[in-house]
Every structure is written in structure tokens, then in C-alpha cells.
Image 1 (tube, rainbow, N blue to C red):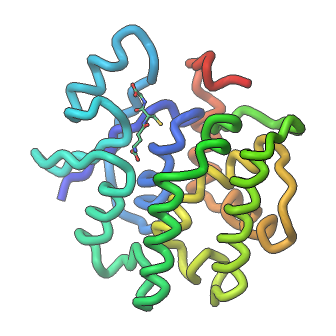
Image 2: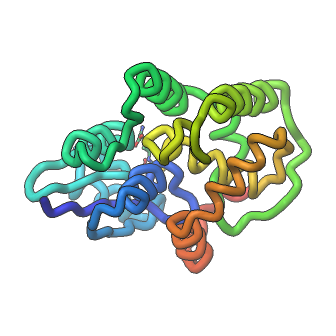
Length: 214
Ligand SMILES: N[C@@H](CCC(=O)N[C@@H](CS)C(=O)NCC(=O)O)C(=O)O
């Protein structure tokens, strides 16, 4: 295999972080190309990599896989020994459910608290919709962590953790208050060398996306 992951700005691109942290955590070698988003020629560049014109995109020789969850499924299937999904069937079903939920929901978190590695603030203007999303994420984490036999949602790091990695960053950046168990999970995730590497790279970027700054 010859994997190349095409990513957006590390400071802002939450969808890009997901497959990137999965590959790092599973210790799978890959090359990466960062395409700065929302510039004058960004779309043209993105369309050179995938018909959707968005990141992340995974190239494996002449195969193109796009959309974060499809990329992570491809990784899971290509490296079965790496156990990208939990091994237990029921855990795997739960992990797929909360991953799909992350992929399709939580608009208030996504729109109100854009991922931004450079941001550290106390966000107080919490709408009812945002609080509902925060509570829902906390309930998912509580349920998984209270049954987990490890530090992650399903024991070992899995695609489910990769899906929620940007939420961890957002809760930390905006000072979102969570319970003890959820805070321990946030601390564990943030301490991962891969997460630290991503955050540092994001902080070092000079590109700014105005609409993602609050
Ligand atoms: N559902 C897609 C979402 C991808 C997405 O929205 N990517 C954003 C960056 S985080 C993007 O490429 N934006 C640039 C554009 O649309 O021009 C996924 O899971 O990968």
C-alpha cells in the first residue's frame, strides 16, 4: 500500500484530524499533503484530489477514498490486525452507531464551536441547542467509558475515539464544563503524542480562516 492523506489546515479541519489521528494511533505509515482551505484556488486544488472537492481524501496508488468515515472503514479493512474497530460484536455495533451519529449530528457544536487549535477561552454564550448537543456527547462518553476496560471509549483506541477527537479539542478550547469521567477522557486524548503533534502543527500554521474564528 502507498497511502497519502490529503488534509485541510490542521488548525481548523476537524474532519481531517479524524483519519489522521487514527493512522497515527495504529502506527500505519502514510504521506500527507495539506491544502489550505477557503483560499482563492483551494477548491481547484481539492478537485485535483477528489470529485467531492473536500478533505480528507485518502489515496492508495490510483484508488481515491473520500469522506472521513469511508476512509477509516478502508483503513480498518486494509489493516485487520490493527483492530481499528472494537473486537467485540456488540461494542463494534455501538462504536459504529456513535461514529455515525457524530458524522451526521451535533450541528450546534459544529457551527458554534469551530475547531481551532490556537483557541483557549471560556465560551459562555451557550444556547439551548448547544447545551443539548454537549449533554448528548457527555451521555455517550459516560455510557461508553463506564463500561470500557481501558482509557478509551471501547478499551483500546478505535475509530469511535478518532470520530470524537475534534470534540475533545473543541471542549478544551472553549472551556466547556463536563463531568469527571468525561474530563479524564479529554485529558487522556489531549495527552496522546499524536494529538499533541497535530495541535502543535495547527498552532504553527499562519493561514487564518475568518469564518472559523469566533
Ligand atoms: N462529511 C465529510 C465532510 C468533509 C468536509 O466538510 N471537509 C471540509 C473541511 S473540514 C472541506 O473540505 N471544506 C472545504 C470546501 O468545502 O471547500 C467528511 O466526513 O469527510
